[in-house]
Image 1 (cartoon, rainbow over the protein chains, first blue to last red):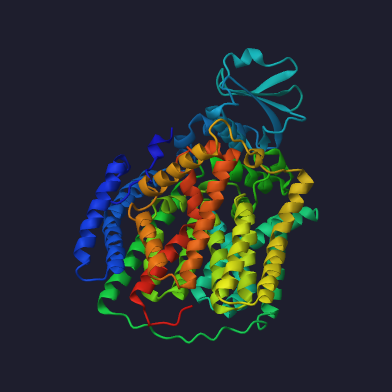
Image 2 (cartoon, rainbow over the protein chains, first blue to last red):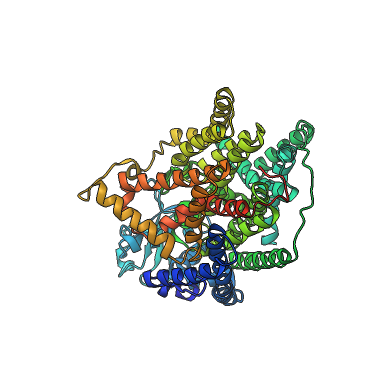
Length: 185
Length: 455
């Protein structure tokens, strides 16, 4: 999901992350040593060593600017033509689209229970749970007391699982729907 | 329209802080641009305090109520504007050599280029990272809809401080609706504000050219540039932590008591920004004592300043502590839990040092020559310029911050997170500006610039 919007902050001058190994580090020191050897002729020892590092830092800042421009620039270029909800959809896909549809139908404040086949207690499920919580709010899915809404999200056979006493109010598809107690609306 | 509402909220808090603090900050010798930058952080601090005090007194946390507080503070600030006498700084024009002009314009271009990139990308990306959604944006949204902080206690990490989420909720109040499209701009503007302040402070510690060199070093970090476009709290934490230490060091050199209040406020704000503020607090106190000792202050002066520092920072932190007690939000157990496991201290120590080395010297988070330059600067400082109190204080503060993380990783359950990429670098970002100023100070000492009266 995030691939289309990913950017790499790790580009480092002329040493992209792939080359940031101990060899790259040693190479830097070799270049640094040469710079120091040259500068040593014109400055005292401490100034030469300090200046060598600064000179290399300044030099690497030029390709660094290029990498930043290509990374962040292409990101900006990709995002600018899109609307806010298109961006969110591209980043989060259904974790955003589903709450967005629910919100259009239920703009009020509710306390809901989410029923899903996704394991919300493991690493990836946490992200889904927190994104749903964020985009669904003011429909509160964290509160466990007085829940007055059932949200079926990516739940197989969801329609048949709705308990008696509840009525499906919003059905996006067979796996994604919202039910309220009968007579609540 | 949405962007206007967003920016107007930030403008209002900054303007109120400017009215309240300008004469005080001016009396400490800060430049106009630096005062604007400081007002940005202090303004968001006022917003955070307003959120917490309104909730404590049972009033709704709303745009109108906060606006009333800002107006009242502005009126009080306006009436008290003559209380502080401006610091009479002799404005000497520093002679600039021809080759230095190239460097100055080069840095200005470099900084502007990066700032444009940062602001544009921050304005383009809505909130997307798990951390910012879970620990900040969700909580801010609950405050926005309920006008209360109570719901935060039901969310994850209820003990996380409020500075960032208050800033988010405040800008959304300004917008009039919850839409996180521009929320990252809070962090981009923080970076911009810090740029102004950092240059001014670096110039006070060194010279104009060395100050610009410090800015160049600041912008050389890839991690910082990216964090300025995301809603992580580390840029704000970096600003508050380093401003607190800068204030303490400036107090040592200039001897103005107001700088202790300045540092204490930022120490309080760092406590309100991230949980790391608590382990940093002893570092601030040690730095205050060392600054007093190195600049030959009397024991009485040092103790008086310590008392003033603890009192003011305590006042800033107080409402959050009240909140934590009221909602029973404790601290993270895994931080306090001294889990040693099977590895033992020595093995852990070696592994943590290795991870530190990898994150600093081999990761793309920093310019690959930055940390070698820092090591070279330390060596020059300890061998050639060991009598410079300021250089020693910078070095000491950096060692203390490293020490905080080394001991935390080795002796507590935080060790579990030591392998997580970028985490260590994110922590080091908090005192990254101190390393920069140490490097610049060494450069300044090497060339023994006599162009400007510095401390």
